[in-house]
Image 1 (tube, helix red, strand yellow):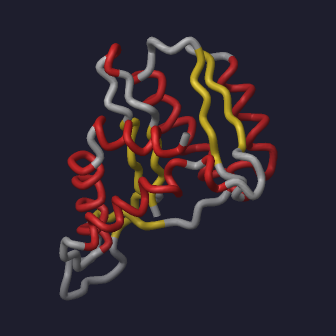
Image 2: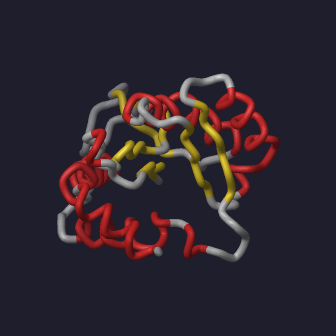
Length: 169
């Protein structure tokens, strides 16, 4: 699983709209040898995203990327779907409290219920990325993560992202 953050491109600030794509994983080591690798080799272990992991990724990855790449903004609004890890266990409130202390301010909002048409990732971004990735052969999860990263960097240009946002209107 990956966490992705995109925004509408802003040519005036030379911002291409790509904030980042992060693999939902934790560092680990192989426990025993296999035909693919020896025992004790560092690897990324995929995890199920729960509320604590989601909040950690937002604080350590997404928010810093937003502030770095959109420092010119007066306020940054991050829209999330209504999945339990996003809003569950007080995440939304804690993230909004944290975002209010930052410069620029970062606000978290949930997309309206039963309104997937407000989520640009679901509308077209993931589908086009999946289409591009499916044309490449991957044998391991690490290969897949590498290809997803490459396609994210190469496939979604500022022009393509801008077109997605215009389609939404």
